[in-house]
Length: 186
View (cartoon, one colour):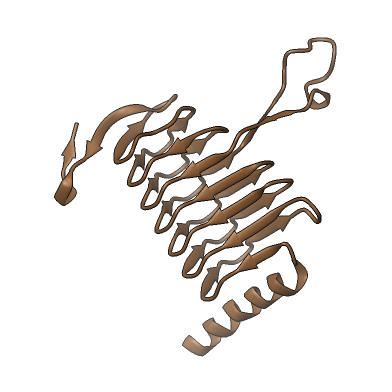
């Protein structure tokens, strides 16, 4: 059974390497079922470090920008990363099921033109090393999440998060701070 599993993972890895020249994947990496990796030819780049786990149904799209996922990070099932500029996920991060990271917004100021024709505003997203994003968390453009921070389930992060902070809510606000030895300072 173990050999079969490695054969499936190796086949997924090779398929991506052969069909997507703008996608660079270190080995070993786990690619779950239905993973979609897209880097637009001539514009986007996707760089995945070693020991990364990408869960079933996850979609990573580098339309015009670069997506970098650091070594040892875990993207659980149905995570979506959408980059028109730059999304960086640090080393050893945990991104839970159905999280959404998007580094752009649509312009909405011209009432005489459809929103889809007004263009977009781009700002990079950076997730520091050793961060944990809870289930269904959303991170919007221009956000920097500091090393060791925790984002609660369902939170919408619209502003920077300091190192080791714990945030939650809509919009996300600081609700605590990680202390040494796994403690919590609320």
